[in-house]
Image (cartoon, rainbow, N blue to C red; front, side):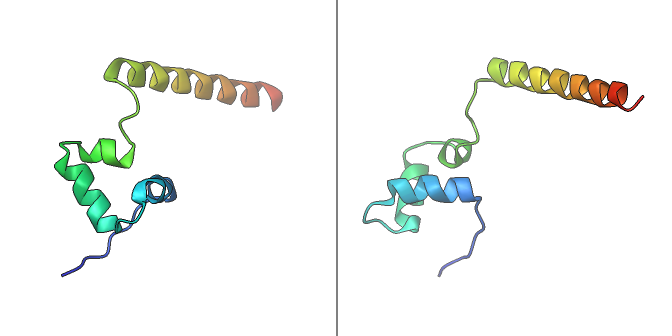
Length: 75
């Protein structure tokens, strides 16, 4: 039995690069069986928790600064 799933373009490209002569099902099964988490397979766990928190804080800070600049420019 087969199932249809949706994946992002980035994940598709990563899987395609690693596919070789395997089917996507075989490749995904290989990744899952190698004890990798789904986040690792899909590439969503790029940073450790401390780095992720730091990046999130930096993005929030930059976003806040951008909003302030737009408000200043409009006055």
